[in-house]
Image 1 (spheres, rainbow, N blue to C red):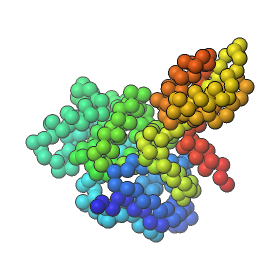
Image 2: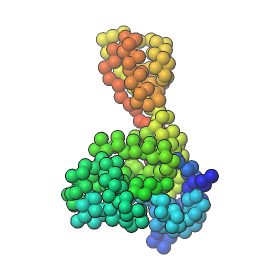
Image 3: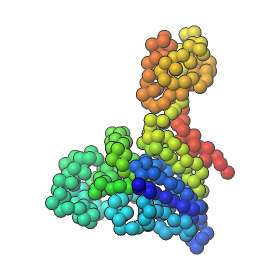
Amino acid sequence: MSAGIVVESVSKTFRGGMVRALDGVSLSIAPGEVFGIIGPNGAGKTTLFGCLLGFLRPDAGGVTIDGHAPDDLEVRGATGYLPERLVMDRWMTGRDFLAYHHALARLPAHDRERDVEAAHARVGLEPEAARRPIRKYSRGMLQRLGLAQALLGRPRWLFLDEPASGVDPAGIVLFRRLLLELKGHGVTVLLNSHQLEQVERVCDRVAYVGKGKVEAVETVSAGAGAERVLRVRWSSAERAPAAETLAAVAERAGGSIVGVDPGSARFQVSDDAGASRLLETLIGAGVRVIEATAEEGRLERLFLAGRDTP
């Protein structure tokens, strides 16, 4: 069996040891897992990514990927990487850029034209955009092109650093669909992002990194378990529904009631579909709903709790 990614007691300092970016970080990431890394700026997330990719050498501890060092050529040949700061040859067209990286990856030349065309289509870049110089790309188009390059060669390990930065809503939906597709093919994905809702939707587990340490690891089950609390308000002109009625409605919709306040109630639902079922059931039961708002997700609460830790 594949050994996955193992991080053991990794520490990393800069400026002659004066700045400690990582302090005894340990993680185990299973093959085929979509694993998220969250935390405030300066927490050590980018340094951790650098160690995982073999760009940085830890001062102590170590990283292995399927039992090999991260910079082992076998690992490098099966790794895709989308950095946060994209540096591209902006005089190239999108097509030329992907063809160049296709050649660098030593992929079959006779498949190059077909693979490049498919890569553009996969990330939603139109043929016209493929012919356009990269200097004329928007931020969102650059992110799509960088993702297309990271997916060349069908990587077994994919590292994504803020992949949805500057991407429009359609691009975010595409990004989620691609991650689910990759997970279905057994690709191990590591995702570093500040977009907590997106992380919660696509990841199996998430690590919160603060001050160079892994302070918590949450299981979120790739969105299926992305539970949230929904606050529902009803018309003040109507008689307030009994708490027993609301609890029964929530149970029928597959959710549960958290609490009842004057003019509103809070419900636990499993996901967006669960929220829709709850609202439909409440309205069907005669509750005149005038507003429904989602409270902080699990990861947002984890992030805020971590920020409050002294």
